[in-house]
Amino acid sequence: MKTLLLLLLITLSEATIGVFVKLTDGRIPIQTLNFYALAFAAVFLMVAMPLATGRALRFPRGNLTDTIIIGLLIAAQISVFNFAMTLAPIANVVIFWSVAPFFTFIFSWLFLDERARWSYLGIFALALVGLVIAKPLAGGHMAGNLVALGDGAVYAAMVTYMRHEGKTESRSDIPWSMLTGAIVLSPALVLTGPGALTGTIFYQELGMALPVMLWAACLGLVSTGFAYFGIAIVLKRLRANTYALVDIIVSPVVATFLGYLIFGEVPAPGMILGGGMLLGAGFWLTRAMARTKGGKPANRK
Figure 1: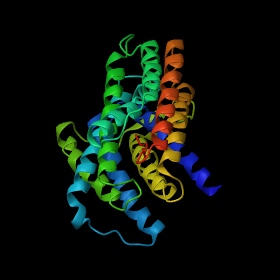
Figure 2: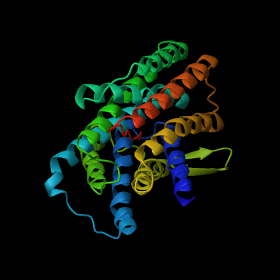
Figure 3: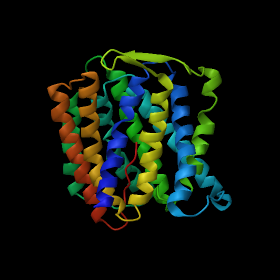
């Protein structure tokens, strides 16, 4: 029961990414916001993981190259995903990002020699129909939709590399990878500026002003740091496939609901129908891959 509760909290925390990005109201350049998010997440993980495991963090001298590469991929994936959130509604981003399992399958087939099955053709056809119905090239959010689709490929590259190296998010090297990502993104402080560090935003509904940096901290601590921390615990008790199957459905649905509840974002009927088909096809493909030998996909934004 505790594991299932933690799994629920993880999917909820991941679903808040778009909310915290949009709550900054552009007061912090997105490139700098991405740096803050990874910096907060790295600090959180370096403190929380030793407390949870009872073991001190060790510098990954024997695994430095992989740690750095994974850090670069984490920085790229999170940066592209958060950037998409500035260009399109939350529902659009999470729905079009859900093509990630299909890119994961393609990369796994190309680079990990995982076998394809004829049944996958039906799954890909369903996903393609859903994509056409969702119309990523229509409306005023085409740029954000395309960025989200691209991020699905970036995420799949990260997962494929981690699987190739035999890694999962449960390894203690993840805090170091997160720190690597923060260091890589740190030039944003100079290139785009630190943002409104002391700025506040007044919320009429609350009758009070809240600091902009609160949302940057929440993005790093809640949406990123806690998510990775929770995954590290969950994957010790559940198979990565089980986590992926839950996350690939719950997180996008919750994120879409939060977008409607907080920002009044209402997806178009085509987006709802096509998105449902995409999510269903992604769930189907992830489940099918999990049943094949060596098919252990993991899911993370």
